[in-house]
Image (cartoon, rainbow, N blue to C red; front, side):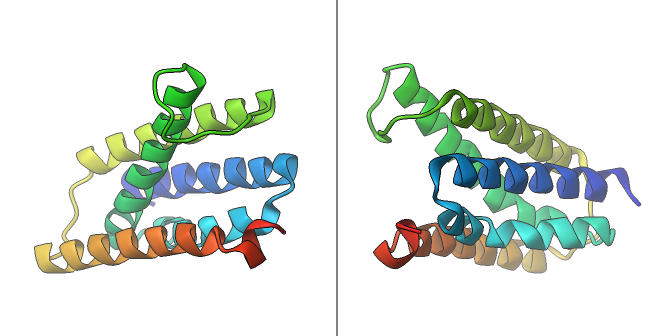
Length: 146
């Protein structure tokens, strides 16, 4: 297994696990299952040593790093884009997610793939859309309250 694919898979899996912990603690498990659906693709592709794992992971890693940054800015009192109350476990999970995103993005930056640029761009845009869609669907009242 190439280092890049394994690292992408492990980082994506760490994000999924941390978000599931948040779901259990906050009693919003279904919401977090829906939010993490796009991350299963880089997990599976990465463990199967597929170069495209990098391109499907990139938008998910950027998205979750952005969400964690907004949470940290709120917790520090610097911005109110995100609001809410966060337990110590949830705060710890934001650190795990953020560190996993940074590690995955760092590895993606070093990993050179043979993927055609058009395929890479298309996959990245598709998974950016899918991650945003999964997040939006997770906020629907029928899912958010479960």
